[in-house]
Amino acid sequence: MQDLEIAKNQLYDKQLTLVIVKNAQVLFQTDSHRISGFIGAIDKLGTQLNGASVADRVAGKALALLCVYAGIREVYAEVLSKKAKAVFEENKVPCEWKQLVDNVLDLNKTGACPFEKAAAGISDPKDSYATFKALLEKMKPCK
Figure 1 (cartoon, rainbow, N blue to C red):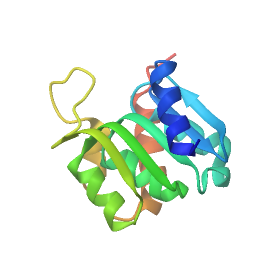
Figure 2: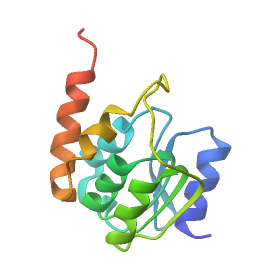
Figure 3: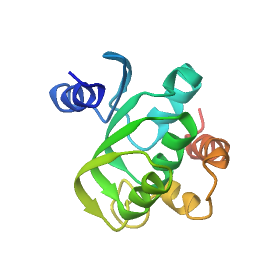
Figure 4: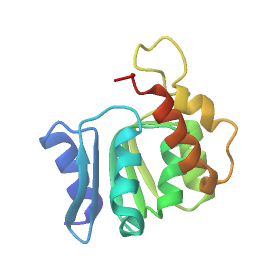
């Protein structure tokens, strides 16, 4: 079975939000929301992500930029934004989706996702990781 098919099956079978597979091995999986899971995967796995396949519930431009940054080979998204699709096409990353949408909304579905707002000003995937990691840190509740 191809890596992307394994990732998709795990995504649905285990009710996850993100699955990353490489060489038929699940490298990373999570049920966390936003892009914190993918940033966690980059923190944990770094260059091991190069050439991996990703299945995600919601992929906006922010996730697309991170996928390109990490060297992801192919992507499946249950919901894919048009801006994410453009990033994947520009960087020749094959992508599949169930539903194509104009924008990715925040968790309350009241406005644009904060990561998508930040992604609007980013064109180079190399700039995305530091920007989104900093935003994620600012969004964490104080302990």
